[in-house]
Image (cartoon, one colour):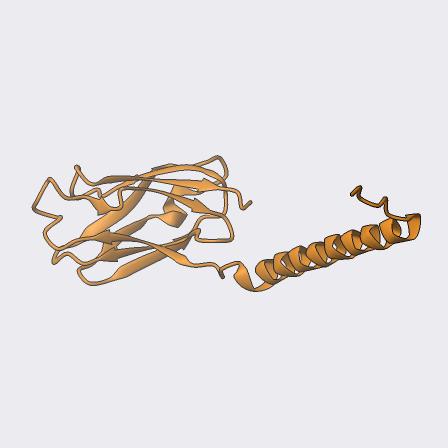
Length: 145
């Protein structure tokens, strides 16, 4: 037995079903993309850099993390939290052009306190504790994508 060749009308109906399925898939993908764009994107968060208890006396300890990368508009608000029992500083020594080092530094971060900054200019920021010379850190700020 030989297979019958479909008539042009049957072939058209089959093609119409394929086109309908493709359109439904496109609509589902577009709806999922819109849902993710609206609901799936996280709200900006704060990045935390901790100073653990004992950091002021133990030279093996440092800002934690000592190096982070943040994204403008996502997590570029940074909180330095002093969990140590002694005074620390967050003294910026370098930043991108146009950033005032004194405006983002804190010279007196007492035990149990915190200090928050928002960095909105992309680039590399270097900082240290001026009381404890071994404590150093780097923040890399990148543009949102």
